[in-house]
Length: 354
Image 1 (cartoon, rainbow, N blue to C red):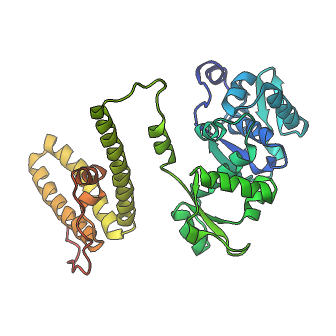
Image 2: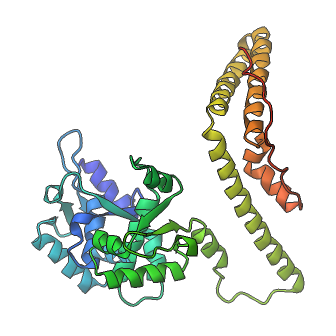
Image 3: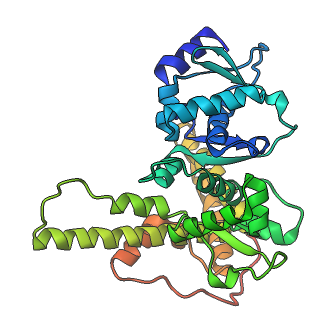
């Protein structure tokens, strides 16, 4: 690691450093929960080799690490000692560490958890809730997985940001007992970190439950937080607060439906081709208007043909361009409107010629 980079890491970049999360290798699952968190922190920011053949290190005081991971100094010191004794971490100086990645199997799997999620799960707890954190990291990593799967059922769940797992699977993955896994899952379900509808609840080790993350949890939590010593509101202020709460709910609905409609459209080859052409032609029009106005007219006509093609593709899917727009849906719902019903069995002409 260069001196400049080390200086930036030491003095300029506070935790959570350049990324808001840590990765916890599964090779650490035999260690206590606190040691896994500390090991994940050191693993996430050290042990990689750069183009000059120099390994990166992490330079951070124990106080900075304990504040970010919600550990006591004594627990942190014991966990660092365990990591060093097991050969996972080497201490290069007082506050400089490196993770020995050759101690892990290659390639090693890992779970991922964000610093704000650690803070939320630890809120109000006097001791580290290690199993809860690791189980949530298990769901967080697998429900946000971009790696395609060859099994059709698993791939379908992956695209919907879901995972099928039994308590035994979870316990084995995070390195805890099945009883601990059950308690952690129930706590996460109760506090809305994960979802498991009744229809998706498993009945045996083969008929496994299906879980999903609550993506709107953080937005809801932020809105519910009250500032201390807030004065009592007048009726007008209460009405305005109620309206803002309703508008936030409308915004969430608009974002959700816009995302869903865009995903439906993007799975259609005809729509994707038309959208690609329109974007390319927008660039050509902007350039032609400056240097060749006559050509701009011709390109504009071609663009109109592709807009018609895009509209036809969306119509066959029961959509319109407006239903892909978050702002349009927000304005529609906030004014008491509703989108038109899906158009079915629409006869659409062949693709426009260029």
